[in-house]
Length: 135
Image (cartoon, rainbow, N blue to C red; front, side, top):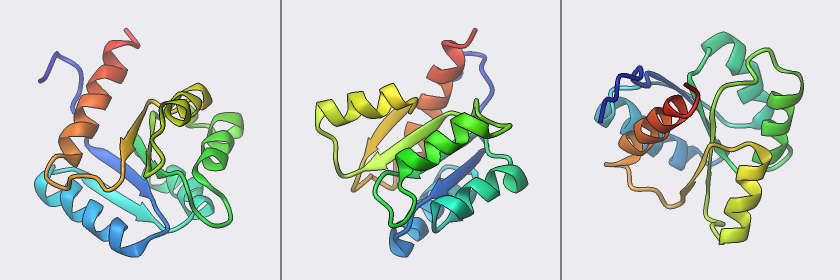
């Protein structure tokens, strides 16, 4: 899988559901070997971007208060790290929704429920694709 691009190592996961956050964190850290930080809300996630400095952000679409598209908008508008690839994770995966998310600037969309055994590999593939197209 390695095409010479760097391997993904640091993932920030913003998700309001605690059980889903926990499963994803275990999947990414123990199966995928990634350094992972999880946040329960959009504002907390935006704050963590500066302190944790992720290479990729996994972002839930539907959250109370500030939803995923709003977080992405804030990140892209005024954030010093506005070039970090963002992957939406959602149960809403109609083709028009996926298209809309990509038009907003999402690198990819992962379906919920996700497969814990392959989540890290999915993110590595998205990461490699992102870097291959930035050259």
